[in-house]
Length: 342
Image 1 (tube, rainbow, N blue to C red):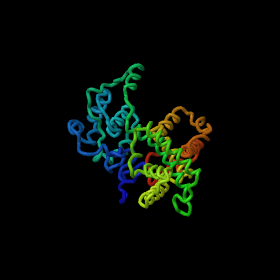
Image 2 (cartoon, one colour; image 1 turned 60 degrees about the horizontal axis):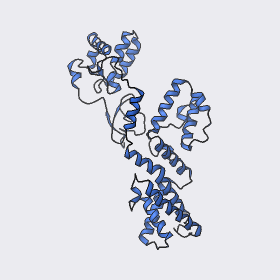
Image 3 (cartoon, rainbow, N blue to C red; image 1 turned 180 degrees about the vertical axis):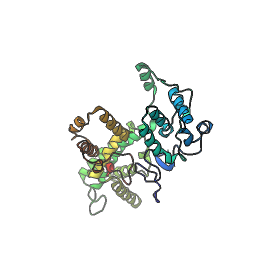
Image 4 (cartoon, rainbow, N blue to C red; image 1 turned 90 degrees about the horizontal axis):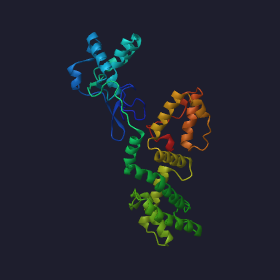
């Protein structure tokens, strides 16, 4: 990233590879700088079509057409089907398109795999068919992912509760002195929050981070309970409390601020739809096929979360003929903090 080899957040994250090349991505979603279709030659590449040049000969084209007609091949990456396409185009006498495609992929023939893997178990026309009852039974047997469920619980239950505690303590500040403005109303709010914590702890047990003594929520709650019991907070706990409040405000923004509101909206969307960006892309795809984009953007979206509203207005601008560069793009990657979280 420091020398420009990788550009995280770009549609072309690897500097020397075009947008159509599938980058190798490791756990966490990070591009390594290598192409997925790269690496050493595989056995099927050396057995028959040994190189890119041979694939362009009449013999090579005949072998590709035979493979195409039989359907007995497997393409695990889009690049692996690349040479089948010009073979089909030539057969359709679309020579210009075939030449253009070969000109595009040719410079990468020494680095990337453009041939599919022969696979006799994949005959042409293979169809997977299942009744609605079988599909429903399969889905019913699929248990929820406990890690996703814990994440959603943290986003929808414990994060909002932590925000309430944070706002409570921010209301106690006076001249940057914590706890300087605590009255009966403040204590009444704290007693209600203490009761809610007990209720939430009993009913929401998927995540346990809030029970970690050094977790932000645990620090806020422990000090809140001590004030409710009118116990003195020692210097160490006071400093830890102040540090926790400052860290939470720096990371999430003050409750009620535009930045905090956008963050909560993004987190709520993530909890409701863990693949939020994928859902957005699928929606755009189907709108482009149905021709219903005009009606969609004409709808009122006043009740949409602020961050999503921005994306919807950007979509409306593009549908009306505006430039996509002038609109907010709802992408999964970004350089710096994502605009939905600001």
